[in-house]
Length: 571
Image (cartoon, rainbow, N blue to C red; front, side, top):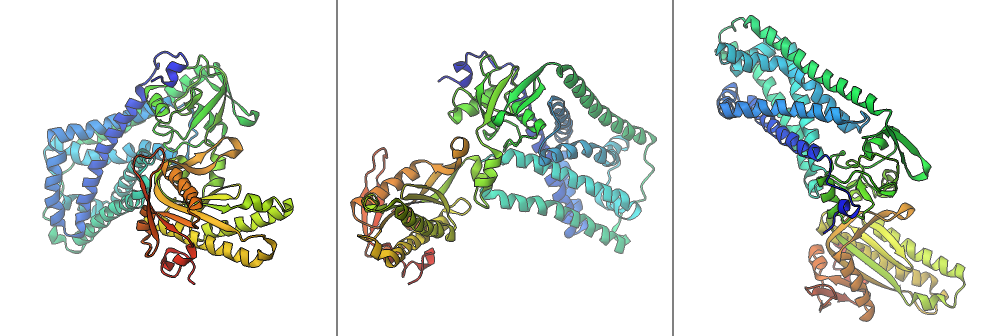
């Protein structure tokens, strides 16, 4: 199977290590995150007692103060910091989304807040061999020097925020993230909150009852400890300054070698060679979606190269993998990974501006493209073509608009998303922000409302019709790919997949059987419909291995009295 690179005649990717280094940085960050979780858990036991904190500290030390744990922890800390500086050096522009800027800033500030704590615990232990327990630490930070305690609390919160942002950028592109996001956010708030409350409770206990403190007054710290602490401050400042200076030198040297990137509407951005297309967009303030933050873990930043692709650097291995997965054409590249070395014209496949306008409220993740289990409603007017042959165009438009109002109101009032109208047919999606059971009930409710609405139209305008309007509706539930699809102004939020094909086939079956509604057995089960007296049928569908069990309902309004909980109107 050819890749985008081989189709263009590119050679091997010239530089693939950055993504591997990101994976190493992620692994080191997870080690530090595990340390924080256990450390916070130890603090939180202060809500129980100081004795519980001390007992848990013994287990904490077994994990993190043995030779292997020490090398793993401080090796991960140093490696994570150095890789962060490497990423900072490689950035062509410091313009970035707020969350990314916050993560970067917190990470650079953190070492200066932690040096004093590390020097006063691990380094002093190594120099003197004297173990410092929770009672002494609490006395020092809560009673003798509360300003230092406040600073350490701030340091822990900053470390936690930095880690949470990193985990967020890592997990955000995952298709299952939305299902567990609330639990993850809740945990991210509760863990540091319990830790701070536990430490404060232990401090109050010692302040109210000094007899709980069974530790002698601390001996004077070795004089060399202050020199070590100052040396660490200087070392971190020097490393950050060196990375920024090296980055400035590199940017200034590349500034004379510039390329021009042309965007839709004729807007042109001139950037130094080596900038990625995403960095160029951010530098020029052009909205450009990137779910994973420019880490090459998603395809939302992809662009279609209209001109100038020939002779450009080929995709890196991760970019090639993503492009192959989404079956991208030969002129599609990931903007965050594509670093052109000559002029070109591009158009973002997903427009950030359009995404904000077309995504229904509460469903912003759907625009990025993800697999969800949704309920689908197809409906169509029967015999409408022959009905309009004998009417003036204005009359036809009037009737269609009344029908479209019925469908639109029914879908919106039951919590669905109206995908599109095609002729006198309509497609609606349910479950973009709910579970499949609720989506199925919403779809049934919308079908009942549409049926009743068409009946009301016949009552109101029956004298104008040679024959009453007749509706056919199909309902099905299952997995589908939901996202922004289309080209140019024709891009909108929609869904594709076997579930929609099956629902469309059920609509055709409803016409063949002269039934108003056909519901798949799976949706009926999810919606807990009472279908006593309705006919069940097994349908073999072309292109589908397994047959589909369906329920055939001649009159949808007959379901309303016994299924009113599904969202349909009670009669």
